[in-house]
Length: 446
Image (cartoon, rainbow, N blue to C red):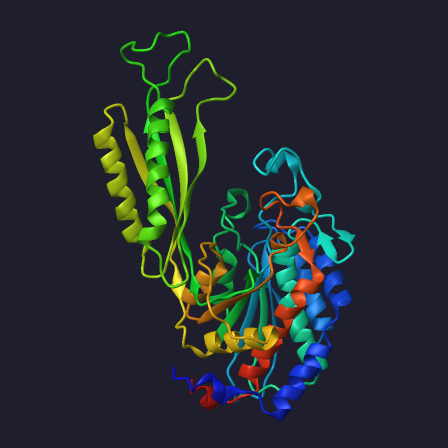
């Protein structure tokens, strides 16, 4: 694809009028109510059906022709469409719909904290401009933003040349729910894009008010350090008995040092890939008298464009071999349990330039520098499946004053500030007009 200079794509009088009309249709009360209604429809990964079916009904009522796309009995996607004349490009507006927490203290605690907070529960609370509840910000406000943008396009009577696909999928969170069909790790968008949904290019909405054309990947490793099943009454050094946990602690410290140094070795234009030792599972908590034979260590390593899972796997294997050579008492094995390669859209691609113009139109200044990112999303999967994609965002509520009880950690990503979402909706409207009121030839894809 070739692009002209951005200055060649300033809006004509009709496009500017459409933009102003559509932006004037943004209804913050309607937006707030949609976020409240969505938050009230619990949608943990692999169980998004109720929320997705609600969005189908909502989109159809808003003039966006929508259908439910089932994945399993409990999980599915919502795909809406605004039809154009057929002469222009098609644009995907996308956001995930599943929440990271279960909203159940029996399942979420103590991992999510000492107690369940209001932003971790699927019972929305309105506090002035804030909507508080599980997933109210991420992902429910993101779904609401792409829907509100399309709703405003309908209400403004914009004549489209290309289709606008408004889609939300389940299974987007970076975890695997074995009891619900192994949902997660972008299984929803993989299903969606292999079952009839496509577009020339797309925009994903996620937190942070920036433009990203690079999308982090992810690889998970499981390391097992081996000892023997022992007995707490046996003296240390007794032949035939050895700990799996103490050698595991040595391995953890070595991996942690490697993870500290890893990001600087693999930084790309926009991605500085981080990594964390995320979990340790060892022994029988109900049988402390019997130290277990295995200590399992789980590591999440993010990747940047230019890296492949195979390359990172080799780098990690070399690390583990060096650890075993360093410590005589470490008997370890390791395996790769999840892979999701990073992806990249050309920074000169139409959708990247259009999203940048949209950001600049909303903020009334030039877009300059993007802070490094490492958060893995569905963007990488969508991009790898053939749809050039750019990520735009909204101000993270944690960057502003907010109730102190919600300021620590991610919580349930559950505090949405309604006025902060308006700029992103305007940017989405801008890119719809910028892309889908032109011909394919005009933007260089025909």
